[in-house]
Amino acid sequence: MNVSSSIDQAALTDSGRFWERYAQAFVQALEGTEVSDENGRLAYPEALGRVRDWLVQAQHDHKKVMIIGNGGSAAVASHMAIDFWKNGGIRALTFNEGATLTCVSNDYCYEEVFAVPIQHFGDAGDIVMCISSSGGSENILRGARAARAKGARVITLSGFQPDNALRQLGDLNFYVPSHSYGFVETLHQFLIHSMLDIKLFQADHMDVYHRNLPMGEK
Image (cartoon, rainbow, N blue to C red; front, side):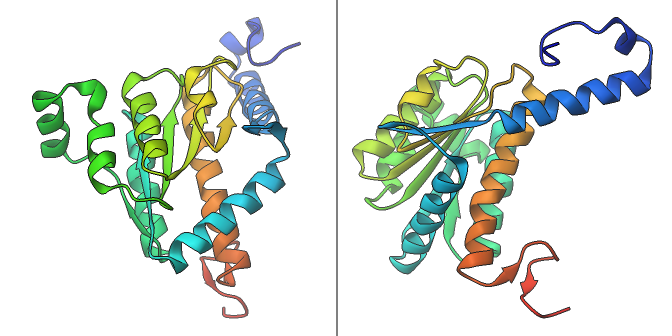
C-alpha cells in the first residue's frame, strides 16, 4: 500500500489508525527525499557536506544567506534566517517585511517580489535558498534565476511533482516526494535545520543534540 496516496477507510474514524498512517506517510516522505545537482542524483550526506562547506566559506568570506518563500514557506524562511545569524554566525536575511513586499509588488509586479531585492542585495558567493512546496511559484523561480545571475549559490527546496521547474534551477536541489503541504513544509524546515546543524556540529563544535551548547558543556 502506498500510504501517501491511498484512502484508508479505518483512518477516517479511528484516531489511532489515522496517526499510524500519518506518521508512516511522513517517514516515507523523509526517507524518499532526493537531492540532485547538474550531474544528477547524489546521496543526501554528500549534499549535506557540500552545504556545510559553502556555509563555512560564506562565513569566512563575509557573505550572506538569503532565503525566499511564500506563505508557510516564508515563515520557514524567517525562522531559519534568524537561526543562521543567531546560532550560525552567518549574516542572513529574508524579504518578507510588509513594506518591501507591497513596494516591489506595486512598483514592479508580484512575480518580481524576490528577484528585485536579490538583484540589489545579492553578491557572488552568497547562498540563496529558494523554498516552494509546488516548485512552481513564479516569484520563487525568478528569484532563483536572479540569484544565479548574481553568482550566488542556489539551493532549492520543493515538493509535489518530481519534474517541477524549481528543481532545475539550483546548484543543489532538495525534493520532498509528497503532495501534502504540511509534510513538505515541515520537511523543508527540517532539511534546512540539518544544513545549519551540520555546520554547527562539525565546524563550530556545538552540540546540536543538546541545546546548541559547546561540546562538553552541560
